[in-house]
Amino acid sequence: MKLSILDQSPISSGKTAKDALNASVELAVQADALGFTRYWIAEHHDMTGLACSNPDVMLGIIGSRTKRIRIGAGAVLLPHYKPFRVAETYNLLATLFPDRLDLGIGRAPGGSAEASIALSGDFLQNVRRMPYSLDDLLHFLHNDFPKERMYSKIKPSPVPDTSPVVWLLGTSEKSAALAAEKGLPYVFGHFMSDTDGPAVVKKYKGQGSRTIVTVSVICAETTTEAEQLALSSMLWSIQKTKDEGDGKVPSIDATQIYNFSGEEQETIRNMRRKMIVGNPQEVRKQLEDLQESYHVDEWMIVTITHSYKARLKSYRLLAEELQLSQ
Image (cartoon, rainbow, N blue to C red; front, side, top):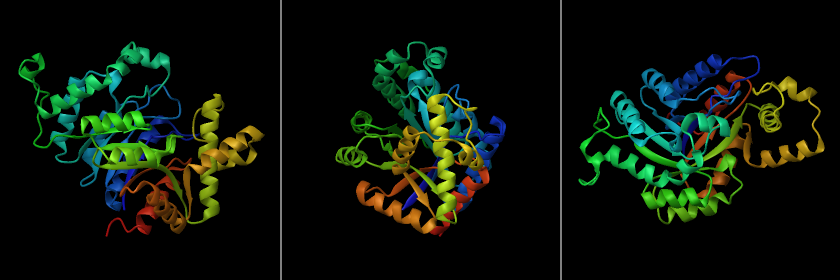
């Protein structure tokens, strides 16, 4: 079983965006040492509790601080950008960090409607054009535009010896079908989807190639501690939905004084069913059980806790339990 990391660079209460970004760099460095396969960082816009609006900049820093681990975006939100610019950026990163670059592509807005308009104008029109934009991006990266196309005369320089590996991210049959159509490896977001994930992945695997499933995991030395950490993360999700609090991940202490309504308690029960929470042995067993459903050999783990130390420890305990560095 391979394990990778998806980092959303969350900002904890009492901390700043700089603290969160520094914690992300530290997490990537530790992931490199612990034996994780990949470290990807997400893209979000105008979100108070998430610090990374530009994975490209972070990957330049993270690549220079790591040696082995594959690094990438999870994901570049392609409807916001011109394919040539994305190809230039990731070719440059792939030149600096040879044979280590992944380019995850998504089509979500990553923020509010206002932020989307500020970034790229008519986002819905750009989403409709995404299959064509994806084609252009792949042609740029592979340098294989048909000669009759104007773009065949240009290259997104610098051109690396090994191109970035493009992955398509999604949470539905539609995204899986697009990945299969384009011949791209696929990442399914189990942690943020109510779709029948195993069915989507099974259908994709009948047409496609490599698959990763992303799951929310919180691991601690004891089950009680893990559940406390998870409750903090779930309260954060509830507060974001209701536009309560300061938008940052609340502390465990905050969960103990928060008066959860009946509706919120039901929401928490539903969210908890999508998460893997427990001590190292319990988490391993839950991952193995999920593997029985998905039949994939690589899991991308997203862990959000108020304490950055607890987050690092969660990943370390999991790496040790699965002997990733062996």
